Image (cartoon, rainbow, N blue to C red; front, side, top):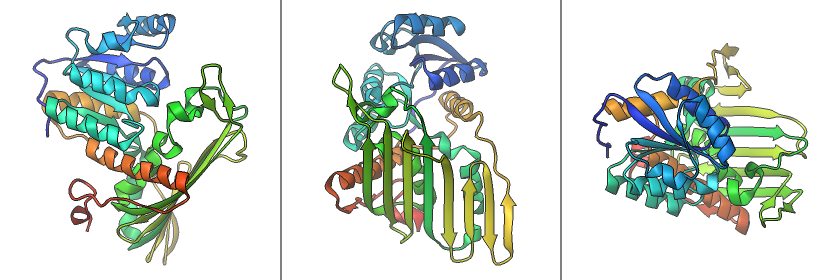
Length: 348
């Protein structure tokens, strides 16, 4: 379903959050003549006022006041993962269009209910997945045919941090299960290889501590998953961060019967019977600006967006299957989508 066009020349935006991503969103909006940042709601009054003053916007004490503020077209949600679904639901109920950073929710059932609500309200619900806009992903898709029939992929991202920051991103209750909070690690592969048949996952936390408010934090997380795709391709995903990791890594590999693709950092290579050659890999800069510009254009002209909420929901269903696998120690089957972007009929 396509949301109705906004009947004005300027999209009026409300922003929930004052952190790093919120600032990228606000900067992007300043560069779009057809958009205006009107109001901001943050965690503390002082931070919100300081942030809003920089962008000539109104500071509101609570996100609840923001989503019902007069004359806003779209609410952009970029704060703590665990609160995404609550804010999105309230914004949709207030008949606002919504942009939200992944994950839409910490559970697939909650996310499904939000998609249903957005359809009923005829509002845009856009879940950001800027990994699909990045240079690595574009180079991967542009060169995927060169490896012939792909049968194995490996994606590893490790981020050592010493000391580990005491932030919500190191708290399972707030960040979510690692492959839910870091949903892009699965989404990139699913976008390339289609539906997943089964998943086996293991997760490790160390340095667990409890804060005075009862929240559990960790100093290190390491999560590994093996995905078997409906096509037969097998993929390994490794995601980790924190103090007990000793080497930074960002490496994506795809093996096929005719070649091998490898992306490490911002460099890419293709190896086949003719040898190894370098690939041009575009920048990772400006992706939030590109995402923001597409959303504004969509609301004004109905130009199609690069990612659907149904695609994000499917990846979340795979991530929650991985979470069940880690909890039970068992391989978990993933339900086959009967329709949508990852149904077998659309990927055969």
